[in-house]
Image (tube, rainbow, N blue to C red):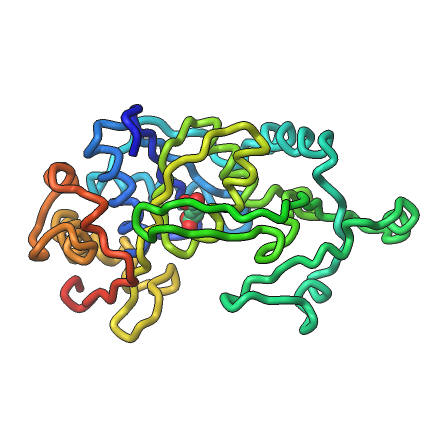
Length: 307
Ligand code: GLU
């Protein structure tokens, strides 16, 4: 990473108690920045107001502090930033990069629609060239898509290595604002990271293909590209990905059974940062932190050792 003071971030979705995968990403984001005397920004990603709440956000902050993962500043939650996103959206519209899309969910997911091997749907540009008369005939509110160029986006991920994605053939024109007026994650995260001066994005591997999407938007909005580190997924013994559904492994349960140091030590060992799963504080780990030691493949965690 470059010599400028690093600015990292945690961007949790306050839709429930953190599970081990969330803690793992937060720990690595914290270590990457704290090992180089950088700054950490906290942001609540609560665009989905049905699933998120201020109470979950409060508990999340408390859980992070219990773990010893502090932050320097918290930026406003996404649900309060609609007017800011409006400005970026309008700028894209003025440049002629947006168009209204009237496709219904079932049209988008029809069997004829192209899908990538990971199940991602490639938007074929159905509504890109509609006439004004055709647009008027729909009589319903559209979502708005940004035109993506036929261009490959490359970057070198600190954990996953080289990654490339052609947005036109592997993603298609992206929704920026849904028909109900809610801005999408890709727009909000790009604006928020850019305005907060974030220089590095550390998060779960499941968001790897979001990086090129965000790099394109960073270019359109005039933000520099951050460095990316997409950390491996944590799996349960039976190979399932840990998620918020695994209630038995969320912090509400774990906090009653083990110390934060034991939890941090177990995760640091799983990451490849410690030879043994010994109890350790995030501060102690910061001195041995090195991205080169963090393994790339999904990690199967022996959860019985924790609970
Ligand atoms: N809010 C997302 C989550 O909790 C993370 C998004 C990001 O780090 O870019 O999974």
